[in-house]
Length: 440
Image 1 (cartoon, rainbow, N blue to C red):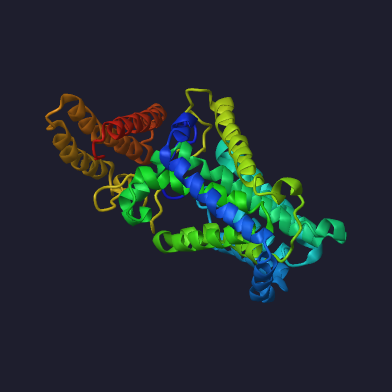
Image 2: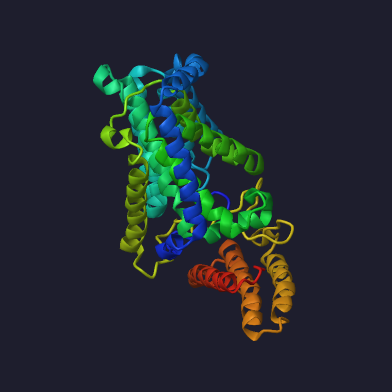
């Protein structure tokens, strides 16, 4: 979501209790548990091995050349971001340093000779550390596991020791699984980050209300990531489901999404093609059907505790929107896919030719919905329906001054306004939801 919508990492997340009391969260968990338990029951039955063998036959051409496939994709990914320029590893990690792009091209070249693959791995870790220097540490945790997973794969694949080399695909699986489970928690902690995407592309929710789709999408991402760490049939089917999801996202979000997710999509394909049957981590737990809900519950507790706990440890209970210079607090709209604060036709109010034009457009957008809201006969409802577009207008103006303004105190004030008004909009939407009043 952070690639295509405004965000503030230091803003206080929605309380975990809001997720634990959300009926759609538990509905998603129940549906996934049914899928996992049914898959494990089939896998344990006499049909399990023939099904896996059939998948082996279909994917055998790729399995025979899986290391070559992965090396080509890893190198291709770094060539692609070299060509894009101005980013460290993903679209939201921007850098003005030209030499970073040349480092990415060097990493791509180092991937192919066996002797230099550890150097390529060191380069990937180095880019992550450079991004850490320029960006917020909590932000960079989204990319730690995947980056380390790919780096570990390159080191293990180049190893001459068979007992190390056999774990190379497992390192990739763990990297992707942890990355997916960690980043999925944004949909529970910051569901409002998804709002601009739905405003611009309402078809993303498949006709479901936003309040239904976002938590269930978070559940799907977390649980499919969890599935990558389970038994062979569960992890392969989870990988196939994830590949379909990621591929479907390419059409609405274009080449930014394709390039940004190319590496993770390739790893998911590799997991689906992996013929190995070994289960190294907690095999006794994974053997029985009861291990599925127990393992999923443990993963949810560990990751939720880590996410909310680390956020409190870094920013405090009330959050903190004051981050070091250079950290990006809101998404800089992409010229090809200008997400951000959107108008009724997908217009980005911070991208006007001048600050005056952008402010006029933002105020024009705010006026109609605000006047319509305050016309409600019930004064409490009128207050909330009027204040939501009023607050959104304040956010629009704050983003405009972040783009066009130069005064450091105004920049700081604008960031505080964005954080505060977004939180209050969330509280007002929750009030409307409890009262059964349609969302504006």
